[in-house]
Image (cartoon, rainbow, N blue to C red; front, side):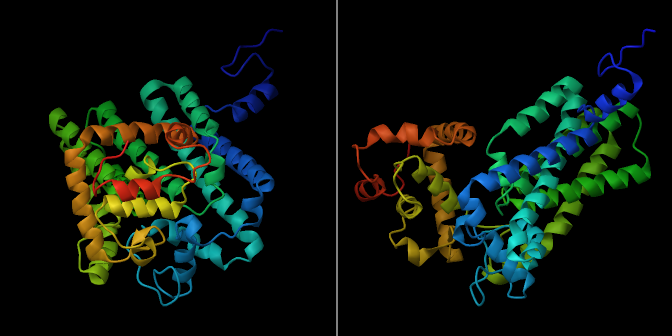
Amino acid sequence: MDHAVSPVGDFTAPQRGLASRLAVDRPRTAFLCGFAASVVLGWTLWLIVPLLRHGEIGGTEHDGYWALASNLVRGNGYVFEPGGEPVLHRPPLAPVLYAPLTLLPAAWQRPAILLLQSLMIGGVCAALFQLTSRILGVRSARLAVGLMLAYPWLYLHVNLPFSVVAQTFFAVLLVNLVVGAIGAETAQGAPIAGARWRRSATALGLAGAMASLAHGTLIFFALFLLAAMAITATIRRQPRLLGTAVASGCVMAVLISPWTYRNWVVAHQFIPIANNVGFTYFFGVAHWQSGPDDTATDVQQLALKLAGVDEPVDEVVHCWGIRDPSLDAAIGRTMVDHLARHPLQTAKRIVLNTLEYYLPFVHDILRRPHYPPGSRGSCASIASCCPSGTPCC
């Protein structure tokens, strides 16, 4: 007897049930697919890369997040080493997430990092699927998840205690919630019910705060999304949606304010999440002036030179951040001036950085022809011959 053709193929009933469970056709299956891919491929990479299997988790090679987590959970404060200076240039969410894992036996720490971040990768896939299906349909949503999981460096990141996975998860979640709130108001054609309105505002504010606390610059991204939501509500004359945007901003501000107050007490400066924006900017400038054989210290020294700082790296930089908050503020002002004078070069670097994100060897290919064969690099020569603030690339 002929049987009906299902969306997952011309199968018998048991086969259709199995195929439905395996197909990425809803956020839940997207989550399971992302989580499984992250665990399996991340663990495989862990097994075949000796540095991951035998290298230390902590230290400056991991931006200090693991050291911050370890000291935080042991009562030493938000510092890189016991008795050290309070840290201002690292956002707190990743260390808070990693803190319990630092108490595990050493042999279990790397698998625990992989498991935690694989859960977030699954969350990214679920939110991405729901977001894309709302706008472009299920087929495009499957493609979006496939492209996400096809990014090879993803499976390196899930093994390392950075903040990149957490910030990706909360950023995608925030976008999905904003689009969902706008779509729900439009679909209903009437104000969202009170309880649902409160849940939506709370979830949006929470996602915005977590994204901001995962990466300091995401606070601007979150505020931009909430502002766009408020403008949309105003244009469409949807007061409840406008109220959702305003309430979400208030929730976000309340959740972030304790950390902002902590920064004020430590540095006597208004630092919403983290500082070091200026030095990070000039490090990006120096990155595209450096050669493939330059060390990280060479590039940091060039970044300081471009920012108008002549002191050695070891005296002013600690774990990729400026030690002195007042010097950091001065470098920030220099950054603003540099941006104003070289907008096209900044745009060019944005394009190059985007390209390098997917193809990390682009830098070596583009910079290698500029130096003689066998040369160790050119950071020292560039820093010695070009004045402070010279544009890069």
